[in-house]
Image (tube, rainbow over all chains, first blue to last red):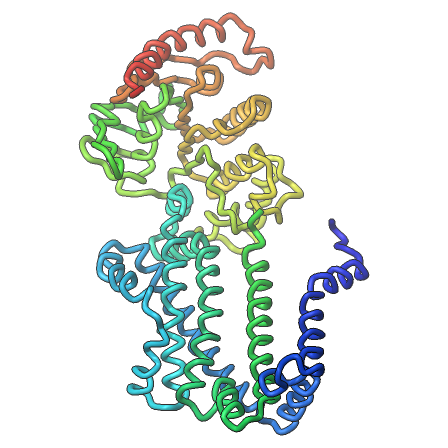
Length: 257
Length: 264
């Protein structure tokens, strides 16, 4: 379809797709308003929305959000760059693989939240410990994705590049890296989801800023409407990040059938 | 033919080492000379090591025993003097046809416009005009192989190493591509080593056909297949049919041997 579907069709598709969300929202509002559940446990959605507007107006949501965005973004960016390079390096060099392979295997299944106290011990309560945690926690899925992708490089493509005068490093950049791209991006998607988990849990436990801190603080003070507002904001941010990432992937992998 | 030997293979042995199982002797004491500007076909049953021999000449595999000389120098790795075309096309799937063809030109001391012009000329030569911005995944098998041939011709290697380049194509496309390759070869007169297991293809394209034995691969005989191939009905001429018969009889023995050796 060269023209794409009609705008009307797109709108109705979206409506059908997100209808369950609408039902959930209505059920939430009704359950709370009709006192089917305690409004303390589940404040009405409209109250949550109002609390959200207040949080935005007071600037709390924005300040804490920016702080979380900075930590998550920096940690994830480091994980993608270092993890990707490490995976390619391991796939291209036998000694590197022999040295690093067992370490990657050992640390991959470890629950990274166990590192929260460790990173605090090293870097304190500020941004540094969060960035380090997200970097360490998100790196290995990226490394493994890049490694597996690079290992699957077609030797005929490698030979073609070499016979056209590409030296070893050039060949790695021109052939191995793009060959690794699909699996690398899969790893990044996993890392993206992990970064949200690590970010919020570390902020919840040890922080004076960020979404996680705000959720914990509001909950402890009994501002449950506001607490739900932040929880929903984080959920929505995660959804948006994944969607945004998917569209980047579509562009990067447009060459695939 | 007065041209001197450009590629010399002398007493080459090669072992194939699968990641599981025991190693196999793929090539045994292979010697071969290919003259400059000659079209030589390497013909043999599957698994006879003909591709391995090509990869050794290409510098893609390490030489274990024996010597491989190209222009009197031992082969130490791949180089742009030897262009390669594979059966699976080996186009960069993330590059458009134009970018694929430009790849080999990017490492040559040419101005940008000159490179673009050259790439376009070879895309036109193989009949892919209009598909410059297509990705390989959007092309048919025949078009992919044309693109791969354009890419290899564009950086002007003096030797063409072709590894069953038409093996993945349907019969009509294959026959068309054979005629086009012959036309291109007559125009450019590069040295060509063409690996195939198709007797007709070998006799039609090559000036000499080197018939290889079943594993371990050796050069069994070399058959001279030079005759006038300009006739569009050449496939029906007596000389063509006789040559095919002659080569076919040589190959048949080896194919039977290869079948008997196959683990059942």
